[in-house]
Length: 186
Image (tube, rainbow, N blue to C red; front, side, top):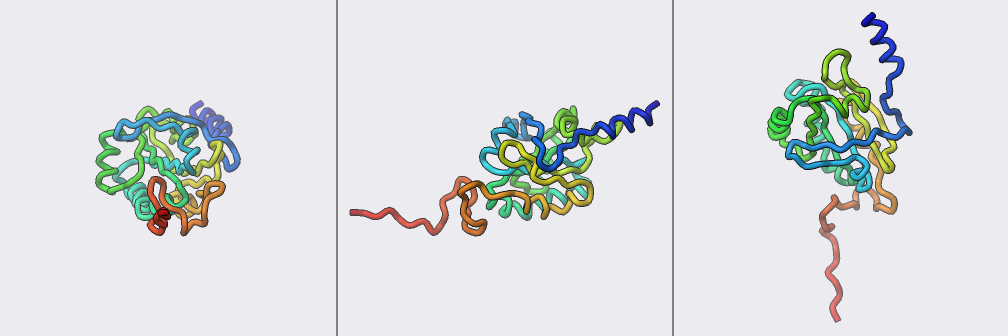
């Protein structure tokens, strides 16, 4: 009976695919700040990275890679949300240890993990999946398993905003380009 339920669940999977609309969510990060996906994508692409467990080998490698490549993400005006079913305290320690500049989202009840259908069978633990979500919550890229540990594909899938400059000339959000000329005086 359990096997047939797992097969039915697998066949009816609703994992968002490229071109589909990503499920919207409102969540709190480890600092208690609220974030809503549909609002975040108005500022630039959002990398929604689900990982199984803090402090494990593959998860540490993946999230360290996002940390090390974060300037590339900022140049595309992108943001990273690192989701785990770990509790807020565990994720706060993990974020601190990694010195990660992006947001960690605890999902101990698996609500968002479930909405994206990336929950492991039986356990309330997410599978390793990464979704790049663009304007209007359109899924631009999906990677899973070992492919999700290599963050290059997710970063490359982050589009420039309409009307944006070429990637090398784009300034990170909230900063003034250092080459800005002083205003003319009369």
